[in-house]
Amino acid sequence: MNNSENTPEHSAEDSSCKRILIIDDEEHFVQVLSRSLTRLGHNTTCAINGEQAIAAIQQKTFDWISLDLRLGKDSGLNLISHLQAQQKEARIVILTGFASIPTAVEAIKLGAFNYLHKPATIKELLRAFEDNTEEGVTIESSPMSVERLEWEHIQRVLHENEGNISSTARVLGMHRRTLQRKLQKHPSRS
Image 1 (cartoon, rainbow, N blue to C red):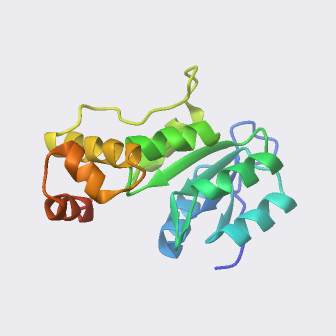
Image 2: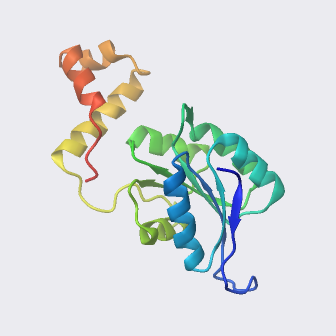
Image 3: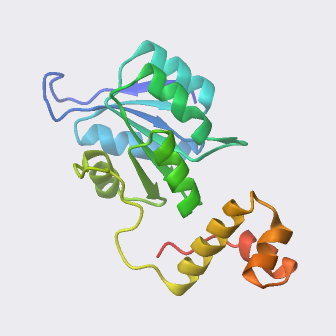
């Protein structure tokens, strides 16, 4: 997908109209999100990789940037500093299907404004951008399930052990293979 722009029928002077850069390697997701945001009166530009995203920020100014955590083999976290260097005022929201507390904390430390789990609704995404709390961060809005709490705890301990599976398994008091099986499962959303 090439860098593309969708312009809504609304006037460019409309103050509620935001210029939004969507960065995600799932082309279908990008197209659907772009169409939905355009229907709501926003101007969207799409990028499916880091190179397209960097080219887009060098050409235009954005109010909001939706950034996928995983861009193919690359991490969206690596793009945050580039985006902020060019677009200091833009609010960056990380969207991911592989959410964890350590990555959320790291994203915020790097300069992301907010962090959302996929699949997120348009309403949730807009709320994440518009959040006017002091911190701006909304990692979870409802109580987590036991499975999700366990997964988050495992991710935190894994992060503290710098990704070392054996050390993490020892700290958690479980067999290394059991830990590997748990890590291969996708976390539940709640």
